Amino acid sequence: MSVFTLLLLNGFVNAQGGGGMNPEMMKQRLKEELKFSDAKIDSITAIQMEFSTKNRQLRNDNLNDDQRKEKMETYNAQRNLRLKAVLSEDEMKKVDAYFENMRKMRQQRQGGK
Image (cartoon, helix red, strand yellow):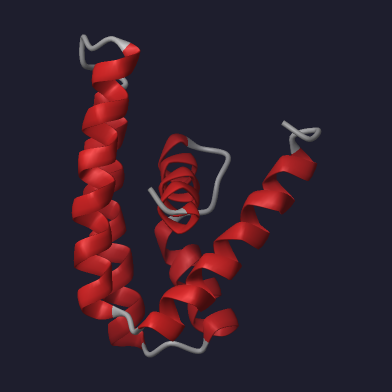
């Protein structure tokens, strides 16, 4: 599972659960900071929203930690395949760096968790 996947997931799940950025704000920031086209940003966001919903539902499933982790890894692999169909290798690197920075900022706001 890539850092990109974990961070993207965390960012969108937080956005959907309150206290985070909503998808429209995320789209705007991705576009401004990464300089991707509207079509590319829309594709990334749609893929992420699909899989963040699946991963969020895992919290409500009656699964043990190992089962939940396995299912999440499966979802993340599927999401990565879909994203790789949309992004070039260089674009994936840009997105990885962007979400790594977002993760660090989120940790600082949360007291270094």
